[in-house]
Image (cartoon, rainbow, N blue to C red; front, side, top):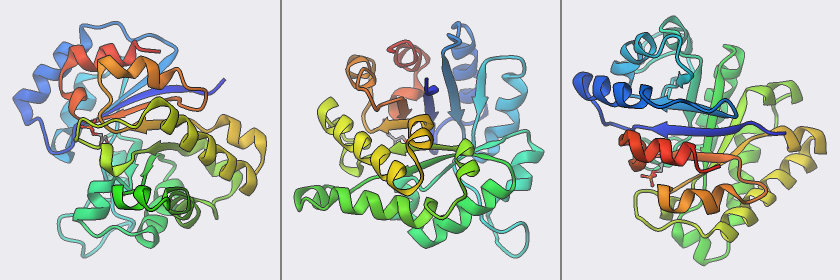
Length: 249
Ligand code: 13P
């Protein structure tokens, strides 16, 4: 059985008191033991979140990291800095990083390799733009995003990989991929992994869906065979909504 996962990507939201409040509210809920729950606060709130969640079932992830170990990279954060704050999971390749901050398949390959070498778990994001779906290029595009960044990894590195398919047209728009569209793409993704590696590896990789997941649609999306959970943006900022999504399996 694959791990069921719900991760909240807080993006550039929640300063210190807001983080305190949201975590307090989340911690009032019992986390079921068949779902792994992550929250990804901003860099500045990582230590605060790790401290607060000590002994609690929610895991803290970072939203990004640099591929380099150290050096002249003003404004950047390395894997050893994350690990030093007891953060062992990082989101890489989010569409906002790709579209607003120039991340490419090539630069992501370096980041992935660096995070794997550091022993970190990666939530790797990818997905097509609306224009690419309209031109029916979404399968090719997703295949390329996966192949460029991940398909040269050795099999055992996949223990550290969680995939998150996030169609860009569904992020923050209120427009969700239909459960059928999500299932179709997730099955395609799993097939690509099987083609590149083998069926057993493909069957063990958790593939999350992201893009306007809400309490009202999570159950139907999570019921799809190849959807193993969600990467949640807006709805992860409200404890009740986020926990409703966690409990939607
Ligand atoms: P929304 O849930 O706000 O659409 O954001 C999804 C996302 O980008 C999570 O990484």
